[in-house]
Image (tube, rainbow, N blue to C red; front, side):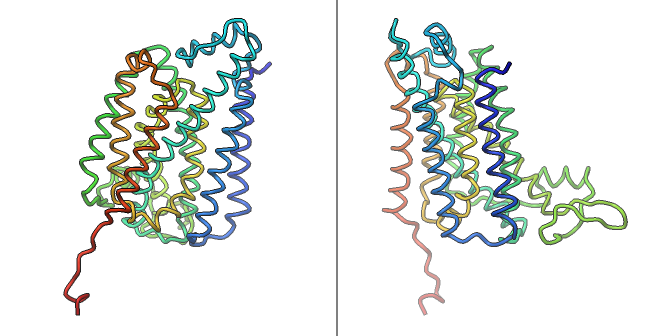
Length: 355
């Protein structure tokens, strides 16, 4: 009645939904400021879960598409991984090759998405400070931001996959977009970013079309005044976070498609990265200043991924494998973090500090 893809995907969504509900109802009963230790623990927990899923894909990845014969495996391979070389007449051996490649694509896509999420965190920190959100409400705003991001990524990923399957030239559009965005991030990395709350497009939209209450009402998104429901500024901040993720999805989703053409692998890697985004926000917000060259690294990373999409035919012909992308991504991140540690930003010494 239901295909393997529907059942596996439904089971994945069910597990994620249960975890979100547990977080909202069990671990998030009281708004509080998330400390560094708590954030670090949750960050490690989400990375561990992603690694567990990697093992599941590595051992049972064929269950995603439900391949029961060499012919079915070959058809799926031609659709999502045409570069793979199967072993004619050896279904078990070919299945192992496919699972190994699928798990490698997942972990590479996850690492790429997780790295690109750092730039998202930079902007979210800026949003919270610009709109005067109290730290004890960060977690609630990010929870609903993550929930909305999951829905938007689902639409983006499967729509993007359908378009790429129908129009192969779209991969070049994605490649050019990533090269442009990577160059923009690299050359603007040293500039101070600012947000003018009054001029933000979401604020303008909300002011025009929504009944907005003029001030925050503790942790509430809505408030009842004179028999009329109004949205609070905290709800507007949630909309801004959603809008920000929509902008970042334009970069990150095509980037993962440079690693794999399988929309399910793209979705799984995206969701694990997004689920870990909130804990990583609290973890990195305390030490973000230590990584001054990380944004430069992210710019280079996007240019590499965009170039890989533009020259994918030539690279595949030259034998460029998925594992090489993983090595390059790890190398770029390692160099940018190491450079930040070796060459920390020098703080200006004021006359008052000298005295």
